[in-house]
Image (cartoon, rainbow, N blue to C red):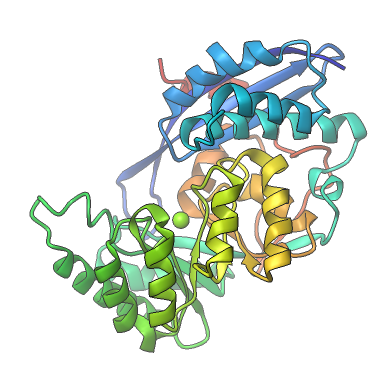
Length: 375
Ligand SMILES: [Mg+2]
């Protein structure tokens, strides 16, 4: 089998929020990638949470042409070739997103060629994976957050995640002092705990938006509210202050979704910076690297969960490997996927059942993809 075509498209997806009577729209961007083989297989790759036009150009102009004629099933060989092409001095960033998008497509092809769903190909550890809902976005005001929490609990979730920080460092010159930002966060998380009751797991995510001082301060104030984990609490996932923070708070810490190179995952674990490590297959170098990160996590006895959204790609990793964990049913990413793919698995009572269709099992609506393309 040989790779005959690689083509990526940058997509911009807009959709109405559509819950609690809110009529505003939200949007997400992603990279949709097709890899075709000489025997007619097409693999669909994906990446997101970065500048999608840069990644699309990297694939179409550099990475794609370099792997034409290569064996798509030789995922280690192709990954290594792309590493030396796009990030030869250990860079992460856009190059690693481009590798992830292509690698996801190659594993999709491998599954289709072998007639196996990807989670079985990766090890087949479990037929269904536990999920949590990411619902608590900044567009909900404090009063709406409680209702939103009840809405998602009503859908069957007993684990729910909300954002904190909300770009606090980036917005400090509005002015919006970090003290004000974390004071608002405490009130928002309190509103969600009151609405959710004591038995629902509440997870928080600062998306790297706080400095260590305010991340620790916020964590201390939220400790009485029984927080399941605090994701990306500190700017840049900076390892040394993450270690300091982990020693100072009883709230478990998580990160990894935006990391590129394997050594960053190793260092986060070897220094004891995290309780939960979060490789994301559409960001952290595809399935090829994420199964290695999962192996490292097993050796370090560190839990892995999905952060950084895109559950329909990440569920295969967590279903495949023995130490797989929670998959993130991220509301905005699921709404985005509904506009790209024809049918999607749905969670039931906090579980996603993995598909038996070969490969990743996502069939795109190519007319919709065409309409969503950024030109
Ligand atoms: Mg996150």
